Length: 429
Ligand code: GLC
Image (cartoon, rainbow, N blue to C red; front, side, top):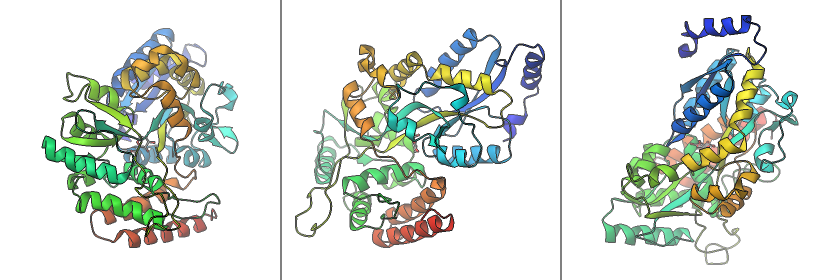
């Protein structure tokens, strides 16, 4: 928080510009942004370009913690205190409903953004009270990276275990599979992909809590067994977030990795990565027996599941400089900046037209038409203003089950009970 108030040099500059009568688009914008993989590199280039095109506006880029939850905590502190900074906010897709309902971010309708070109799902995720509160910046979808020199892509969870076991035995790599197992938002994303693969969900169509279904118990049991029985996932992964898992893969220590698109460019960079040219991506697997098998009776078939994530850009409702803030957002979400970001980082553009540009193919881990299909069928997390609380309950119980403190069934029953009480308390049941 303090960071934003130690601005002895910057604030006078802002006041000066404002008092020069330079119009509404002048001033200093503070903008804290994430910096995993090659994100910081591309953002710096684009922000400097923006400043060149807009001589009256300076952008004060701030680094934020990599973990989405820590960023969330910081933002809540700032916004709850009605601070006027940061001016521009990078929101995780699961925060928009909460921040909009709290009145912390301003509706963008007054700026008349052109949203036609965006994937409808990415726009829907940013509507609150029928008003658009943030513009999608990049889309994240969870995917399975695998070593093409060691295994073929698995279709089922059973295939994945078999390939991981055989692959590690042959190659002597220390790990078979790594994912984000620390107690934070990333764990919920990984769980959602196993859950969908086993045919389960967190909430049903009517918003009822079904995260304690038989499918869910099997999904969590599978995850725990990968650590404790098959030992293909190292125990250390129960403290890992995105970057630790990326390092394990790019250092050539694991056969499989679950991560977001951003990991692709860094892992292809021969200067830093040992696996450039030796990996590809595929969808997360599904259960091995699609219903019908003994013991599986009545269970729904799993579906290859990619969690829908990604970042949006929004404006602090208390900013002193809404016009300039929107101007920066409009600039960063233009097709040409999205294309450049995709080519430099591997992140997926939320604008559909960018997928028609032949250059895009050189930047993504999968052909652009497949990326489009994956985005269109990706699975969102529950859209609710109490998502942060709901997720925290899940994080606690998932992590307890994975570390062997509680049986998966009991963990999910407890989580479901607490989530039902939470939704009841806020009148969302
Ligand atoms: C990525 C995703 C975000 C998700 C987070 C979890 O940043 O874009 O949606 O919540 O990872 O770690």
